[in-house]
Length: 293
Image 1 (cartoon, rainbow, N blue to C red):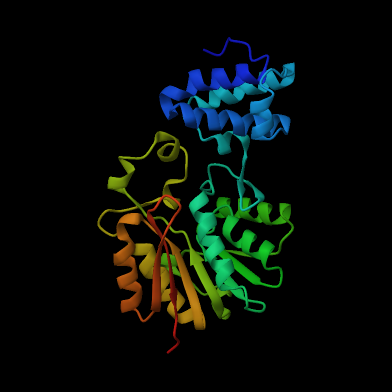
Image 2 (image 1 turned 60 degrees about the vertical axis):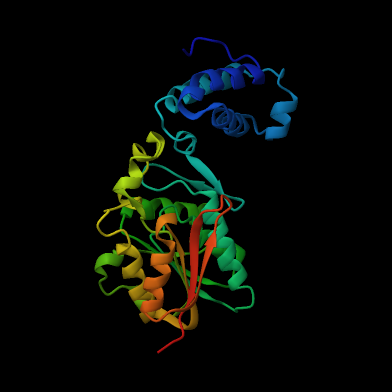
């Protein structure tokens, strides 16, 4: 399968499509070829497509073959390359953290729009993973005070490395939102609490591609069918105690539970709840305001 030469850019695209299209489809295989070739050569996608006859040097050919072998197992391209792009920044990723996704960029954009006129906002990200959410917010709002928690110490290690790489100061804390103990983050009142918690049910899992189910961290993705909102309930309860008056709680959500999540938040005292769709037209994010008690 991998004995063919990849002497030119076009050869590489062709071999990627032949190898990966049965698993992902032609368009996704082509997109992966662009990501890998751009990462190795520094060329933009447009330049790669425009100069398909350009030669690929021997070292890059060897690397391409090794990368293609890993991709053929179903391993996500971001894990193979060791990094992913999010909101214009670069983030280290490995199997300890979820791969940052475009819909989460939309959620972050909503937070930034909400905080545009707030001086030195305090922000908490719950279930931070790679740290892409708090690091991006701190990068975009330098005077913000940003905190983040995760149950996984391996994930926190990745997040801390990403904060250092992107030259921002985020306070990371090991904590379990389902079993909160006394931790530093509870001493702060926040203008925004944000979370992209586990929300994929076991039923949803049956419809997912193996490159997600076999490689991304199980505990960061899945919840039981019998209690799909368990993290949302715990985070909403926490937020009701730690948001400042007029502060906002943001969620990324399972499209199947948008209305149920809004109803739960309103029942716990939140107001002005807004359910938004992502770029694919799916219910994907919620913002609700805490009126104070």
